[in-house]
Image 1 (cartoon, rainbow, N blue to C red):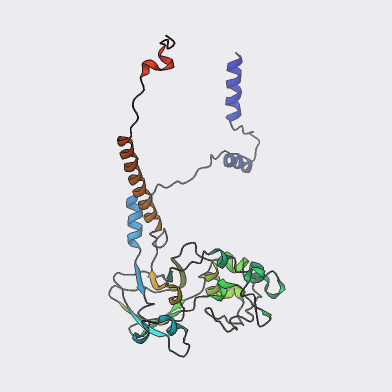
Image 2 (image 1 turned 90 degrees about the vertical axis):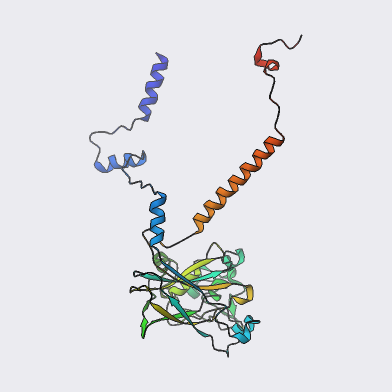
Length: 331
């Protein structure tokens, strides 16, 4: 009887008891706590995922090497640092498949370590939100002050702002690029002040990247907001804008760009990417490559352990000498 009472008590403790007088909100809360709410749990099959990614159309063009004049191919750093030399360049893109609007424009940087610890820390979130009212800028060193005056926005991240520009021509018509709403809404509203303006920015002898309009608040400078969200990997893409009209197959797009940004000093690469998206987002090969790498590594390790086992296998134990055999081993 005692055992039955204990089992009955346990069963009662697992039952979610709902009073008939409870309100619907209370009942829903009980279901939420017990994880009994109805939910949609789609099972993504490989065929569905592969099909969705096939819908995504991409055009990728590396231009950092092609936009350097032949006379400077052996010394690209001197070319990019010489402000007297023109940096304009033209590229031709061929559309292979129909691309449905919106078409996202990204710039891609390779071998660029935005995740370096010192680089990531070189910013002041309080200053980005409150401007000169904040004096918590010690983390921005060495881009904290310039000529004795504070820099807004301070730090290496803002100082190295990407500043290549792109113009797209189809036939005789320039394609309009929508450059609004390219940053996260939460960043615009909560992390960058609506009354904070650039101050003393890029006024030093060493210019890192792009300049900012001192008459536009930081919350509206979306190029900066996108750049300040640092990437976790050395190869990354950042959104530049959107083309709001379809591109047809066999269209020829002429890209006029300004090759301003210096990636030659550290062996980096620059690419221009045009991409559509599916309900799963854009194309990203990282997860697939990671799965293949982990699976391949597991297969190799299993083969190694199998060979080691075959070479150095342990002999089987004589069960007659075991303690559970019942044989008296003292004799």
